[in-house]
Image (cartoon, rainbow, N blue to C red):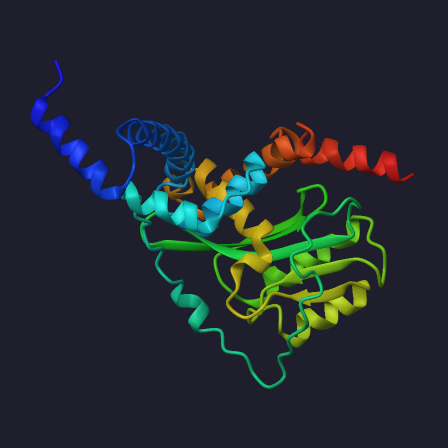
Length: 282
C-alpha cells in the first residue's frame, strides 16, 4: 500500500522541479543502478589496494587492468559519495636525506607518457620503492621494467639508499638485448637518477635518458602500477629478516614475469608476450 503522505510529497517535489513523477522514478532507478555497478568496480580496486589508492591510481588500474577509460571527476564523485577515503601514505623520510648538488642533471621527458610500446627492450622504466618489514626495518627495491612486455628485466634490494644497488641494477642490463643509442630508460628526477655516476653508466650502455616532470608520478605510471601490485600481492611486512624479504621479492619477480597472466598482454605472461613480440618483429 502506497503511503499517501509520501506520494503527495513526491508529487509536490516533482511539480517544483518541473518533472513528471514517472520520469523521476525512471531517473532514480537508472542512476542508482549505474552508480552501484561503478561503485562496486571502484570498491573492488580500492579494497585490493588496501584503501591506499587515490583516484589517480584507481584511474590507472581501470585503464591498465580493465581497459576502462573513466573521467576522473566521476571516480572522485563516487569515492566521495560512498566515503572511500584514502589512507595517506607516510612520506619516505630517507628521500629527504638525498640532496641534489650542482653536479646533478635532469633530462627532458622524452617518453611523454607514450606507454603503448610494441618493441621489446626499446623503452625501459625504473624507480625505487621502500618496503617496511620486521620491527621498524626498511628495505629499498630498485626495479627496471620493459614497457612493451611489462617484464621486470632487472632489480636489486638493499638495506640502504647508497648509489651502489641502483648502479648494480643497471649493470644487470648488459644481459638483455638493448639497441644502443635507440633504447630509452625513463625515471623520475630523484637523487640517484640525476647523479653523475648513474648518468655516466647509462651513457656507457648507449641508453637514452628520459625523466618525468618534477613531482609528477603519472609520468612514470608503469612503475607505480607494478609496485602497487607487488605491495598488494606480497606479505612483505611479515618478513623478519632481510634474507626472508629478499626471498619473498625474488619469488614474486619470478611469478610476475613467468606465471602472472595479464589481460592487456593478450592473456599472456610478460615472458610469453616478449617472445610473441620478438617473433613478430623478426
